Image (cartoon, rainbow, N blue to C red; front, side, top):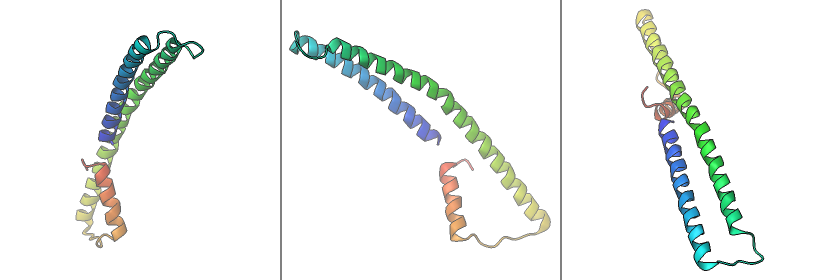
Length: 121
């Protein structure tokens, strides 16, 4: 999950950089190729709309960062609780001399899925 959050954050940063570049290219193209574009929507207005969209995007990124931090903290707490629970279960097994039957295919799949999402377990 943490890697996915980092990947998403990098995607946001790249998109922001791409928007800057697109804006620069549009301004350059408009100035050089279409100095007088009569009857069409004003390119400057379009660029201002692009700037507004970029601003909204940056606001979204700012709102996303605390969510990512909280996600990481929650994941850590869940892993710690799960590790404690597993340790307690193992201790109880030792104390009561209880042996478990081998895992079914379904349980093995669930276990591998859990480990793939939380390798620190």
